[in-house]
Length: 129
Image (cartoon, rainbow, N blue to C red; front, side, top):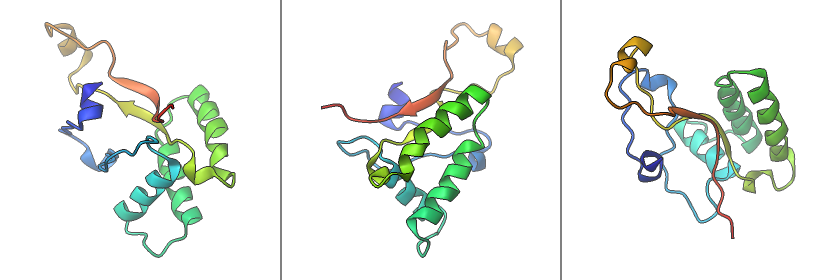
C-alpha cells in the first residue's frame, strides 16, 4: 500500500497499457474532475469539452473490468458523474495494482516471500472529514 501513497512505481513491462496518475492528491482525494483533467492533458485533448474527455476516460477504464460484478458496480457508481456535481465526486478506479509480479505461478511458489494481494478491484480515494 505504501507504494501507492509514496508514488514509488516501477513498470517493467507493458507500460503503454498502464495508467499512472502522476499528480499530487488534494485534501478531497482524487475527484472525477481531476481525473478528467489529467486524462485531457495525457491525451492532448485541450480543445475537447469535459463530456468528450470524460466519455473517453470512462471507455478506457471500463476496458479493465474483469467480471460482470465489477461492471455492475462500476456502472452503478459512475452514474453519479452525470449529476450536476459529478466532477466533484470521488474517482472510482478499477483494477488498481498494488504490486504486480510478472513471474509465472510456478516461479511464484518458489519465492521465499510472496505478497498476498497484487491488486484491488476498485480504489476510491476520498478524504473523510
